[in-house]
Image (cartoon, rainbow, N blue to C red; front, side, top):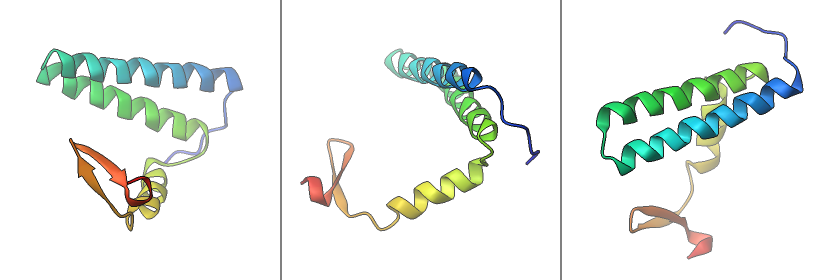
Length: 89
């Protein structure tokens, strides 16, 4: 990963707004059952998340490792396609 100097706080706001815009495109592609647009929208969303992480001095790999460590031992069950933690059952 290339180390970059952190950018102005306003840039983070722009990047986070773009993440939500891209996630909206994921939702639209799902609603339209459009696989091609879905692939593009997922890719765009991941790219914007990578950019935000880099702006904060974080790597995608580290963020994924932190998230995995948090959920790897989680217990629960899936109800109607949604995972529910055991403490919320």
